[in-house]
Image (cartoon, rainbow, N blue to C red; front, side):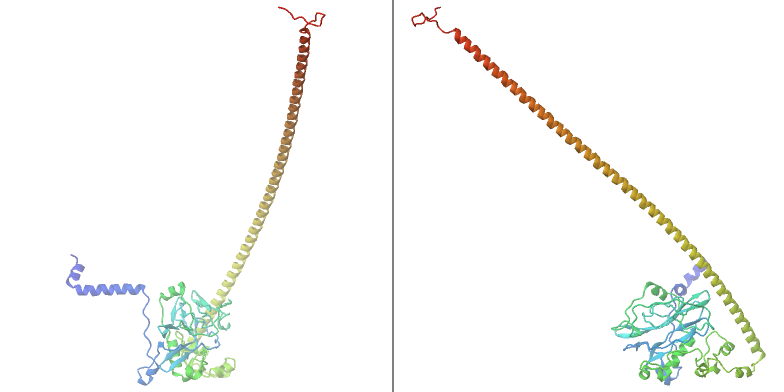
Length: 452
C-alpha cells in the first residue's frame, strides 16, 4: 500500500472533497466562464437603489432611434452600438460609443431584449473572438443583424470598413472599402427579438458556436456609460419619446473618463483629457485648440517631457511600421493582381483550347454526319438496285411463266390436233370396213348372205 493510498484510506472525506475539486477544475477548463455578476449601480446608497438595472420587462423596448456615428478616435477602438436599457424608472437610452477593445482580437456582441413566456428578457452583451447571436436586430454601423461587417482583426491590428464605419483616415490608416447590402430591411427599427412584432430569426451554427467560446464582460468604461445614462432624466423614453438628446458619445466628450489601457499624457496629447470638457466648442473650431494657448502651457516636469518624447518616438515607430505594412500590403496587392492576371490569362488560354477542342469535336461530328449520310445514300442506292433486280426477276419469272403457258397451250393444241387426226383416221378406217362388209345382190334384188 502506497503512502497516497494510505492517506486516501485514512481520510475518505478529504479525498472525496479533493476529487470533487479536481473534477470541478477540469470542468471549468472546458466550459465557458459563468456570467459576470451585475455591477452595483446604487453604490451602497439606498437613495440610488432605483438606478439598479432590471433585466426583464412586461412591455417591449422602444424602437431604435436614428443617429449618426462619430469618427473612430484611434486604432483598436470597436464600435459598441447604443441600446435601450431599463431600471425601475423605465427604459433609458445608452449611447453608442467607441470602446477600446480589452485585448487584441476582441469583438463585441451587442445585447438584446428577447420575448420569453410573456416577458421581455435582457441578454447582456460580451467580448469574444467571434460575434455571436444578438437577436437579429439591425443596430446599424456594421451590426446588420448577423455578425459584424464594420471591420476585422489581422494579428494585432484592427482594419475598419469605411463603407459602414465613420473613420478619419488622418487618425486611422487601417481602412478598406467593402460595400454591404442588407436584404429585407425592417424600417420599423424594432429593438427586440421574438414576440408578436419582434425580429423572427434563429441563431445559425456560427452564432451558436460563438456562444460557447470564452467571453469577457463589458469594460469599466461601458459600465460607466450605462450608469451615467441611467442617472440622466433626459435619456429616458418617458421624456425624449424615442429621441434621446445624447444618442452617441463622441471621444472628446467622455465626461473626463480616460479609455482603459492609456496613459494620461496620451489623453492630453490627443485631446481626450479632463481639460477638454468644452467638447462642442472645440469641435466648432475644427476640433483644434488655440495654438498660442497650447504653446504657453509649460510642461509639468522633466519626467513628463521625457515621457512625451518617448511617446513621440514610439508614435514615429508605429507610423513607420504602418507605412511598412502599407507598402507590404500594396506589394501583396500588386502580387495578387499579377497572379490574378496570370490566372485570367491561363483561364483565357484554357477557354481558347476548350473552344478549339469543341470546334474539332464539331468538325468531327460534321464529318461523321457526312459519312453517315453517305452510308445512308449508299444503302438507299443498294436498296434501289435490289428492288430493280427483284423487279427484273419478277418480270423474267412472268416471261418464263408466259412462255410455259404458251408451251402448254401449244402442247394442248398439238395434242388436240393429234386427237383430231386420230379421230379422223379412226373414222376413215371405220368407213373402209363398212364398205367391205356390205352384202352382194343376186340380180333379183335379193341379196345373198354369206355362208360360213
